[in-house]
Length: 578
Image (tube, rainbow, N blue to C red; front, side, top):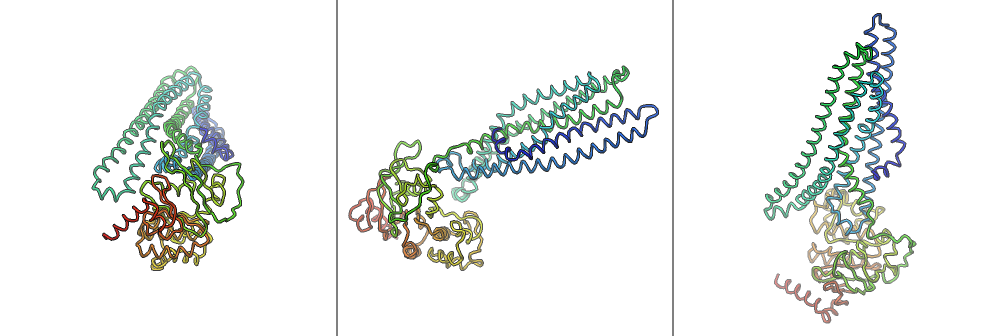
C-alpha cells in the first residue's frame, strides 16, 4: 500500500477527480430506481397526473445522462491514472536495476526481475484500476442503498443490511484464504519463467544432448504447479459468487414475501418494491465485481512487496555522496592497482590477492592465467561492477570509489567475452557509446576492427538489421562489431575481456596491428587465454589462483615465470600437433 501511495502522490489531482466523478455516478445509479419507483407509485394512483409523470421522467433522464457522462469521463481518467502509475513503477524498477551491483542483481535473477517489471506491474495496474472502479464505489452504494431502504421501510432496511453484512463476512474469510495462494502463485510464476527462459535460450544445448523429453517434463511440472494453485484460487472465486447470488435471491424472496403485508399496513408502496429490488441488483453487481477484485488484491499486494524489495534495496556499490566530481589530469598512469584484494560476499577465500601494477598510457597491459585465476574479476573491479575489498584501485590517480560511476565508465570502453549486440541496426550499435559519431568514424572503427569488409558486403551496410543479441551474425562478426563499438567511444582505457577468442589467427594479428596505431594515446587492458594474442604487450600480468606470479614482457616471463612458461609450452605443443 505504501508503494501505491508513493507513486499515486504525484497524480493526486487525477485521483481526486476519479473519486468525485465516481460518487456522482453512483448517486445517479441509485436515484434512477428511486425515480422509477416513484413513477410506478404515481401510475398506480387513481387519477394519475401526466404532468407529474413527465416531470419525474425528465428528472430520471437528466440524472441518467449526468451519471453516464461522469462514468465515461471517470473511466478515462482512471485508466490514465493507472497507466501513469504503471509507467512510473517500470521506470523506477529499470533505473534501480541499472544501479544494482552484479551480486545484487544475481540475488534476484534475470527471470524474476523481468517478471516483476512486466507481469507484477501489470497486476498492480489492473488491480488499482479495478479497485478504483469496482471496490471504491461499494461503500458509497452501500450507504446510498441503505438510506433508500430505510427511508422506504425499516424492516426492508434491516433485511437489506443483514444481506450486506453476510456477504461482507464471507468475502473477508475467503480473501484471507486466498492471500497465501496468490503469494505462492507469484513464486510459481517466477519458477515457470525461469525454466521457460532456460529452455528457450539453451535450446541448442537441449537438442544437442537429446534432453527434449526431460526438459518438457520439468517445464510441465512448473506449469502443473501453477495450474493447481490457480484452480484453488478460482474455486474461491466460484464459491464467493455463488454465495453472493444466493444471498441476493433470498433477499428478493423476502422482499416479495413480506411486501404484501407491509403494503396493506400502509408501510410500503407498490413502486417501492421495484425500486428496492433494482437497488439490490445494483448492489449485487458491485458486490460481485468488488469480490472478484478483492480476491486479486492479495496477489497485487504480493507484487507490491516484490517490487518494494528491489526499490528499497540499498546497492552494495554506490557513489560517495561527499566526493566532488574530480577533474581528470590525463596522466601517464591511467590505472593503478595498489595492493588490491577482492573477496566475493560470503566467500571464505580471496579471489584476488595483493595485486600491484599500473596500466600506462600508450601501452598494452595483458592479463593471462588458468581458468578460475581471476582474470575477468579484474575487469569487473575496473568497471566497478564489484567493489575492491582491500587496497585501492586508482583511475588517473583517483580512487575509483571517489569517482562517480558515470564519470568512470564514460572514460572506459569494455568489450566482454560474450559479445552482445542490441536489436536495431549496425549503426545504432556502433553509436551506443558515442551517439554523435559520424559515418566516417563508424567506417574507420570497422576498418580497425577488421569488420569493414563484411559490413560493406551487406545490402544495407551500416543500416543492416541486427537481431537481439546479434544472433544473425557469427561469433567472430559479433566480436569485431563489439570491438568497433568500443573504438567509436574513444575512451581513456580499453578493456578487452577475452574478446578475440572467436577470431582466426590471421584476423587476430591484423586486428592487433591496427589497434596498436589506434590506441597510441590511451591505455589498453587485454584479458586473454592465447599467448599469441598478448605476446606483443608491453606488460603481461600472469595470474595463478588470484595472485600475480609474474609481471613483465613475453621474453622476460618465458625466463622467469614457470606458470607462464607452462602455458606457452602447452599452447605451442597444441599448435605443433595441429
